[in-house]
Image 1 (spheres, rainbow, N blue to C red):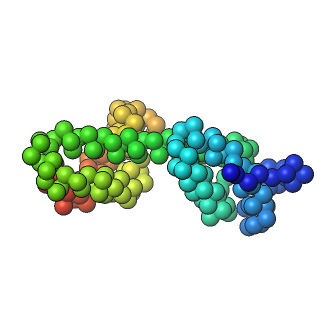
Image 2: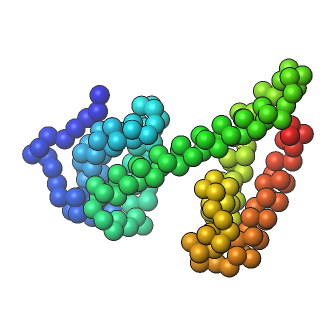
Image 3: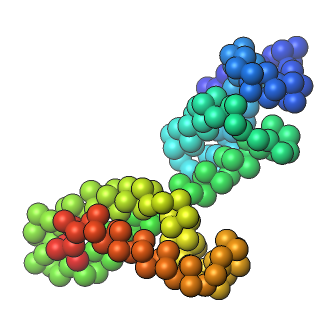
Length: 190
C-alpha cells in the first residue's frame, strides 16, 4: 500500500521543485508522497511490482541527490513519468541483454560442458559484462550501447551523436578492446 497526500496538502509543482532544489526536505517529502504511488503503478506496466517499486525509489533518491544540478524543462510530473519510463526501458534492455548472454552461452556449450562447473558462472559473467560496459568512458559506452543494444548503424550513430563515422568505429573498436581486457578471465567460457 502506498502513502498518498491529502488534497489540502497539495503544493504547486513549480514551487515544490524549486523548494527541493534549495534543499527543503519537507517539499521533497511532499513530492515523494504525491508521486510515489502513481509512479509505482506506472512502472508496474513495464516491470514486476518489486522491480517497479525499487526503480521509483532509486529515482526519488536520485532527485534528492542531484537536486541542485537537476534541470526540469517540462513540468515536474512530466519529468517524473518520463524518467520512470526511460529507466524502465533501460531495465528491460539490460534484462534482455543478460538473457541473450545466457542463450549464447547455452548455444555454444555442448551437453558435456553443461556438466562443467564453469557453465554455472553465467550469472556472474552477465554481471561482469554489465559492470564492464557501465565502466566504459561515457562516450564509448553510449556509442557501444547504440551499436550493440539498439542495433543502430554506424551512420545513424554518427548522425545522432554528431561525430564522424570514423569516430564511431574507433569508439566501438576501443570499447571491444577494453571489454576483452576486463573480461579476459572469462574468455575460456566462450
